[in-house]
Every structure is written in structure tokens, then in C-alpha cells.
Amino acid sequence: MSWGVQQRLEFIEFRLFWEGSINRADIKDCFGVSTPQASKDLMLYQERAPGNMEYDTRAKRYVAAEKFVLRFLDPDPYVYLTQLRSVAEGIVPAHDSWISELPQADVALTPKRDVAIEVLRKILDAVREGRSVDVFYQSMNKTRPEPIWRRITPHAFGYDGFRWHVRAYCHLELKFKDFLLPRILGVGGQDEPGATGDQDWLWNNHFDVIIGPHPDLTESQRQVVAKDYGFDQGRGVLSIRYAMLFYVLKRLGLLGDAAKQSARTQHIVTINRKETEAALERAEFQL
Image (cartoon, rainbow, N blue to C red; front, side):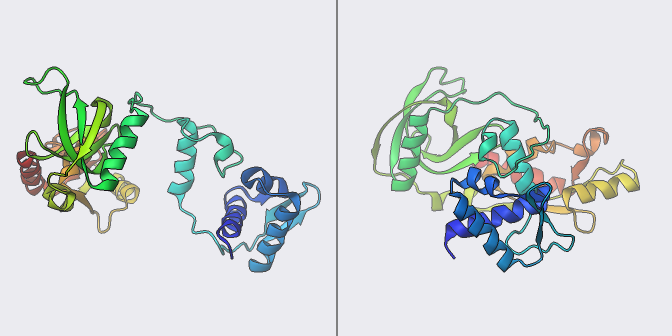
């Protein structure tokens, strides 16, 4: 079975599972295939997943049968919600989503950080080639209030939930650092690399942060927080790169002693807080 056919069969099952129905026009609109091809796809689905759908003559659509069984799709709520979020944020146009009946949705927007296309292309090229590259970078360091040219050897990208940065060896400070993409104002030529990604200890090593419900929550509240975060035995483990530790803790409200914050707004705490603080100190020291 070709990849294209497989995709269309998954699409048919997606629509049947999440929306309960599908017709030929849905397949034609999403994949740009002909009417005969869409009919063949529906027939093939019926052969491969017998009894999964029935034709509703009144609605002129195929509908999910009562004893529907998944054959091609491994449904994940987050896949569906990620599509919904992408449309709500304007990242993906509605017609490119597999969701036909988009429910009303909104997201807590953050200001869009401007990343120049040419900057990203040239940084990606340096990563692929394993080369160093000159960047015109605006630091927030008091000692460098104006942008300067500096050479970096990039090897990875990180996202803190709000901003993208490139992880790179800095030839000026002789250590690995994070460089925010919007602050790279220009990119120059490539040259021989400095230290490579396999030498970036903070990127290649992980620390386990153990989290659990806030102790001031009631028993039923702790249970629902455990369910919300997928805790096992009332606690969860987040295996985090040392290089990303600060960003993750900040986003989860776990910098400092979260147990001293109001349980009404801060629902989780760090159980191994002392070890986490030591790990964070180690990461920041090496930065």
C-alpha cells in the first residue's frame, strides 16, 4: 500500500472517529484526488475495515457504525487538540486541517517573536554542515549594550514555550550558550567549527524532576491533579535536559519553593526540590 493511500485511509478513519461521518467530497477537498479515486478509497476502507461504516442515504454520507473498531488510526487527544490550536493561532489554515467541523476555540496568545527567514535558513545550514558561522547578535548583557559580530557553532534548537533559541558553542566566551533567534540581526560566513554538540554536557545530559500535587490541595483535588498530569502513584517524573531545566521550571512555576505559593493557582510542586535546585545551579554555573 502506497503512502498516499495509507494517509487517505487514516483520514477516513479520523473523520469517522472524531466526527462520525465522511463522504467523497471530504477526501477530494483534502487530498486533491479525483471523484473516482475518492470512491476507490472508501471502497478500500470498507474492505480493510468491514462493518466500520454505513451509508446514510438521507445525509448522503458514510457514518460510523455502532460497532466501530479502529484499524488504521491510533487516536491521540493531543494530536486533535494540536490541530485545533494550530488553526486557532493562525499557524495552519482551516482547510489544511483534518478537522471539518472546527469547534470555536481560542488560545492564550503571546506576542509573536520575529524570526527572520534568512537567519533561520543560514543557521539551519550551519547545523547541517557542522560548521561555525558569524552572527550579528544583540545581547542583553550590560557589558555589551550594542550588537556585535560573534562566531558560534550551532548544533540544536530549543523552545521555552514562548521563544526559540539556537544552542551553540560561543567562540567568544568559549562555552555553550543559548542564542535567541529574534536577537540574531544578521548572519555572515561559515568557517571551521569550534566545540561540537557531542561536547555540550548540559544538552546531552538529563535531570529527573519529581513533581506532585500541591500539599494544600484536598484529597479529591490532588487526585484530579494527578490525573491531569498523568502521575503514577501520585507523582510524576520529568526527564529534562540540563540546558532546558530553567525554562521548564519557570514555565511550570517551579522556580523556588512552589509549596509556599497558593495551591489555588500553583497546583504542582517539586518533590525533590533540593536536588533540583542543585541541578539548576550546576546548569547555570556551567552556562
